[in-house]
Image 1 (cartoon, one colour):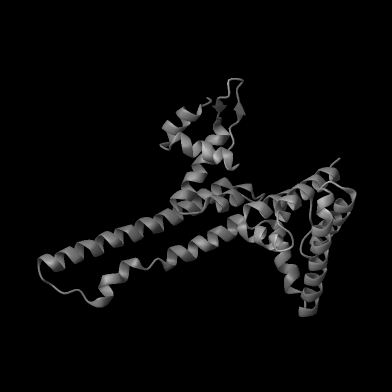
Image 2 (cartoon, helix red, strand yellow):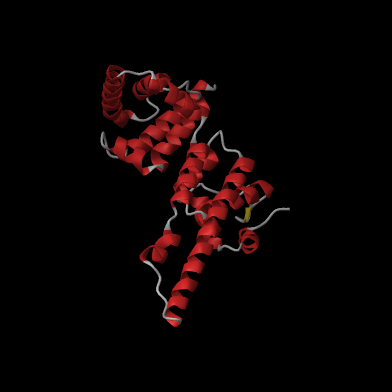
Length: 250
């Protein structure tokens, strides 16, 4: 069964504006758009929306949700299991908060005394935060990340310094050449070196490279890094990298 924006909004208990926003930022695209401009959502989009709403319930930012769902290592069943654990921890914390409220009301009504520690015991969410961080790492980490971690362990300070300098020099060259166009021969030759340099950390492939390109504009930290070399470089890098990845598969 397919759903229109309004039908899916009613089914999920969210606004049509939310669905439009998810479409605009590329988080949840419809299965197709009919000739009359109506968006149509199928089962796969419904399952993805469920994941988005669970992550939102757990206060994950939209850009993090996008990265998690786009990860090649994302597993829906495992994500649901982790979400169940996190929501359970959140439920337990809310139960403790309610208990603290009841005890506070009772102390006021019956003029009893709560010790200082009792006032704040239910506000400690360290366990939930710890598990959330572990879950984020597990969902976000790809095989490439694990491979990178292993290779970095074996690097010396000299190795890291050399790689950093090589990357810095390369980025300066790319920034200088980018006015010629992301698809120009000059830029593409430099992008080929950028792709090759990833082997210092993990074995790249076109799919991973496209994902990295998307991250350059989706993650403010990456964007800020490339903007240091030239204004608008993150977007240009994305276009150049995706074009290069496409040429590798031709």
